[in-house]
Image (tube, rainbow, N blue to C red; front, top):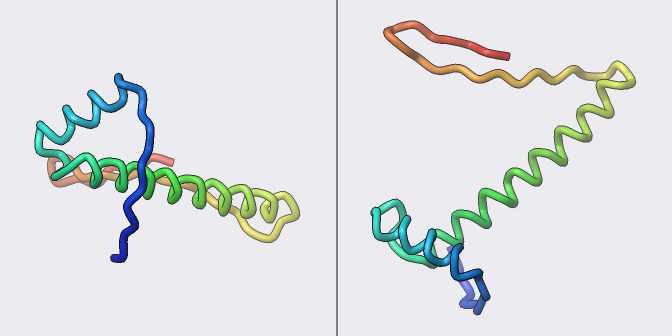
Length: 81
């Protein structure tokens, strides 16, 4: 992955939260924490854009989209729509 260094301004409260996450070991550095946050935000926005497009298609009867969540507990898979 190619990277470019940029300077950003954050609210002190936000930076303290980032530092806490780094201190807890959730991220190796401030930089990685910010990279991850931006990457996830962009992915969510792209996902919402795709869903809006598909919802429009559903309105004219072309496709129907259903989101489900599932996880395993006590050897059983639980599904929620």
